[in-house]
Length: 311
Image 1 (cartoon, rainbow, N blue to C red):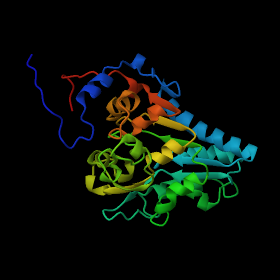
Image 2 (cartoon, rainbow, N blue to C red):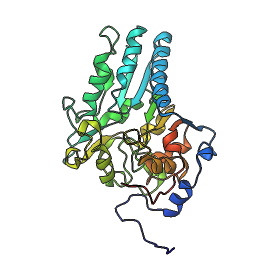
Image 3 (cartoon, rainbow, N blue to C red):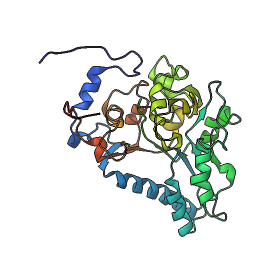
Image 4 (cartoon, rainbow, N blue to C red):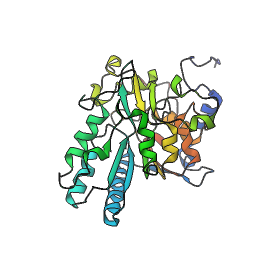
């Protein structure tokens, strides 16, 4: 058989093929092993991951309510499953007046204007629709405690989280580029001279990677049909500083296409979990932090090339 060598396309953000080849060869049974004992990786059925996420949030909210303590969460959007969390809150009559949530990101236009909360594809709209409005009125936190990024608060967003002592938990999962929130590896707004400098960056507007636009064009909010022009070109996002400043992180890897074994996330996850810690794979910073990682069986499965397979 002939050997055919080539360089990856120059628009690919992370192009270290030796590192990629190394992590792709990690078998499923070795994926949970990591030198940082605080970086705890588990492989679970996909349905178990959603169950754990919902119950983890509910437990933390109820525990804080019972103890009379404040709770601050950084939440990803959009996620209709928050309705399940709201149902548990309503069923158990949990008082959420001490709950504070911050969306981790939001879309923006080409000029950096952040999408308004009443735009149906915005993450602020998703938060209100799937969580806030589903909690019984007498149990809801004040509306100004469920916070999304806006043109008005962007400059102060990092301080707003820091003033609460940082988030108690940041929930997250990697994008196709290995992005964390919308912290993109190829965004000029996150260019840094060193990893240490990059770790200090806070919220800002950034340019979305073409891969993120492609990924999000498959989301249900945009018709699940690959309409690249439907996805805004920029976003507002928290920075590495807010993720690092959280007391704990829960990272979830469970995205496949329509329940099939097809997933761009299988390579991104391996780079995040076992590749070099680098701004070129933003979520890799979690390897250095106290983090619980939940990986679905489909994402953890061994990667095997199949020349007989079809498109």
